[in-house]
Length: 485
Length: 98
Image (cartoon, rainbow over all chains, first blue to last red; front, side, top):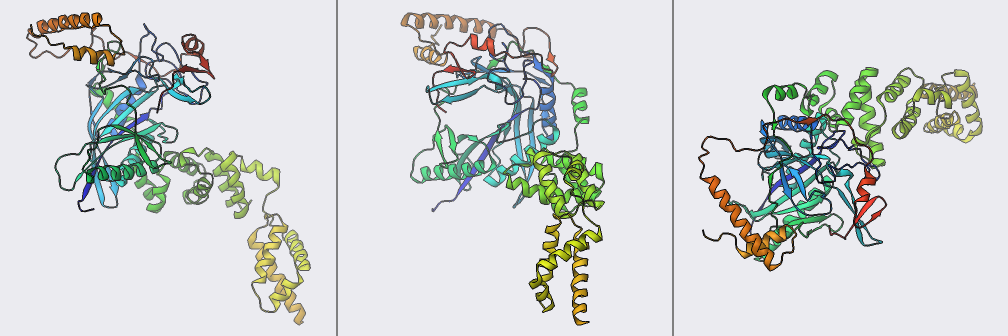
């Protein structure tokens, strides 16, 4: 390739807000209800129904705006975006075009090349559409309006990003901000955070933008990265062949690693926006903004610094523990219960991370209780269970959130420190493995490890390993001296 | 008054609104829209210097609901209005791409 190209990327990020009810009606937003069970005349667009705004939606949107350095639009209103599609029962989506609730913000991101600022053009409030499921059997579409009217904010960035790395850094940062605010759980896989990527390429040094395409259907950070790389390649190929890039919406197919032009929602992208006459304007006075600001919880960067200062954790550990709100909450709650931040950190950083990888789950899906982890740490500290047994119990806490104290009692897993019992087990093992005993005496000191292992196993892994080691050594040495004597 | 609503424009608006208009209806729609624009011309003659654009008919603001679930299962009512029938709780609609 002779020419050098630069990729210019802007994002539109839709985030489902963590409210109990929909944006304009009292229907539940709970995930997974029977199709069309969370519906009413408002969210199914019945004539004569009147939408009334959920106050929490405004508060979440303002909170996100403040945390991303936006200017709050103190007089804002809603508009109708008109289009026909089966997921949209009103034939319009209530959104904000003219006076979005937040404008002109920025987020600072960190990449390998250093820190950069990415501008936020605006954040607006809107309602989600229903869900369409294709029915293969009857070759029709089934419509479920449970999601229709679920509150969203759409965060529109400036076209300030130049690589997939910067896009991921932006999304990670935004996700942490919104999660920490409690405004959304931001699960890409479940669709509570969805990113559309606007991408164009231009020759390096050019002052004008190329024609951009918009890519949808990106439901993981990996998919975002692959889609950006794939679309950049596609557009450069077109330009190299002297063909134009067409401004269009494309759907990313992560399996085929290629994007396809989507049939547009209508023949033209003309949404004929106009003010929604059903919804009076929203006036956000200084006092309300200050009240929301005052409720703002500790955000990611503050937590990162505090974990190092207050708990003496290394920066790396603090980084991992704060990388997900759920993980940070677990860490803090468990530490408050047991007062052992380093031990809690170790359980979360090592065993929890290993199990998450094994179960292919994200930290946001952690669901065991801090009480049970704190109890386990207590059991180990008091010497009731040894490290091996603790790990075994932790796996069950991870999957089933059991009470480790009850579990240890029921399964008789207390560490056996009783010298007599250990001695009897070691005697039996030595009797059954004369070759190993002979090997030890013949100079193969490794044979002792085998005998220790066998003795531990004979005791169901519950013996105090220190005591077993000591007793095996004593008995081997005693045995040897006996021989010599 | 110059004709501002062209036949092409009526065609386009018809497509956007998903309306199939007869030739006669198109002509009528064109005349109606010309009259509407004429009314707007009249409004444009008023001096609105320093007046904020009106966003809502009534002088109310901040009409909110609290975030409390008040509605129960609404599926029966939704199903009753489904022209294509219901399958597994979903409303049947002609196949859409995407």
